[in-house]
Image (cartoon, rainbow, N blue to C red):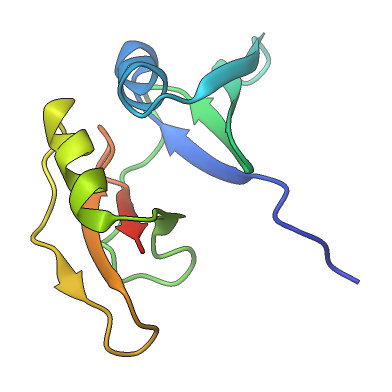
Length: 125
């Protein structure tokens, strides 16, 4: 019944920081952007490979409750072939990561990093 993932929605607080992080640093392509005056936010669709992100950008969205242990989406993980190379790529773009760890449940290795609003993101091989 359910097919592949359609998109992941992310709430961002800063228009320029979201662009610098997701487009300039992570390399997502801008597909569409719309300003919604009735809500006062920007809706930005981004794509990279099979991953589509839907960014909602508005400065006065509420903060995350905890980091990251709260009900709902915990984090977004990107599959990579080589986590060491992915971490080096992130560091070269000025994005700090947590240390690489071994996934004893699912296999492979992973490292967490954060977007400008503190959303936990992960690279996982």
